[in-house]
Image 1: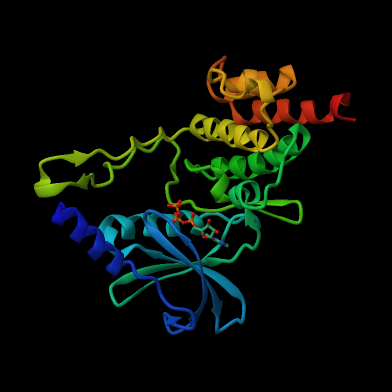
Image 2: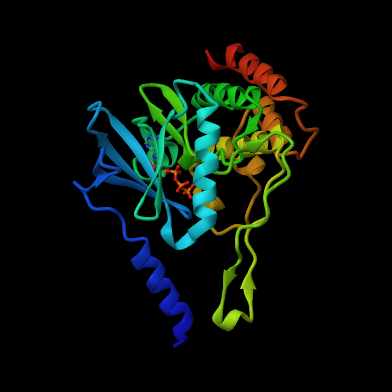
Length: 282
Ligand SMILES: Nc1ncnc2c1ncn2[C@@H]1O[C@H](COP(=O)(O)OP(=O)(O)OP(=O)(O)O)[C@@H](O)[C@H]1O
């Protein structure tokens, strides 16, 4: 057995041990449940004892040290400059016992990831278009404030009462901003080898549009049922597997930059709306 990796992951788990239910963070936020454990953060649903309202409190993962704290501080700065009812508002950023916490308004709802993979929800073309229009409105808002989200994925989109909410601006950047230095690479035994971290996306609107293309495919695949005679056959492309209308297929190809990319989010919004109002869906 290799002891160094084993010991370091043991130490990381011990350092990242989550706050227990009923603990009070920052002398104000009563932990009610842990709702997320990402690569750089641990997120809790808490009750703000001053206002009686629920809040989401994200803690920088202690084992990820300065890098996680910097990401959290960035997220706070960006959230403070946004003001949208379907994006969390930044309430507070504080340090306690050398741990950094970001407090945000709590947006209730299920993530699209949970709806698809845990609750078995299926989305057809029309649902996909409706949801994407709402999501795009939020992404366009973020762009209009000078930022790109850069992590538009199904676990970062909440859905409640037919409304879409966009969370996790931990990777967001100003449009045109040079990507930051890479996240520290994972060290292996005696530092002989390192595992490179993923390259950063460009800070441009097209990066979010590309993510929206993947987001739409996740939704559309939720309703995909392979034919019995297809099973075991060679892997087919999404264009072959999903029975999409030609216009939607072409739109997704443009988002994924397989055909001429969209010149702007506005052009994509125009296409989305005209496809949805098209009589094909009546
Ligand atoms: N403002 C919020 N309101 C309600 N729930 C939230 C909020 N922010 C985060 N969550 C919940 O916490 C989970 C993790 O949040 P988030 O994605 O921001 O953390 P993360 O550490 O950046 O995760 P990852 O590394 O997976 O991106 C979300 O999937 C969601 O369930």
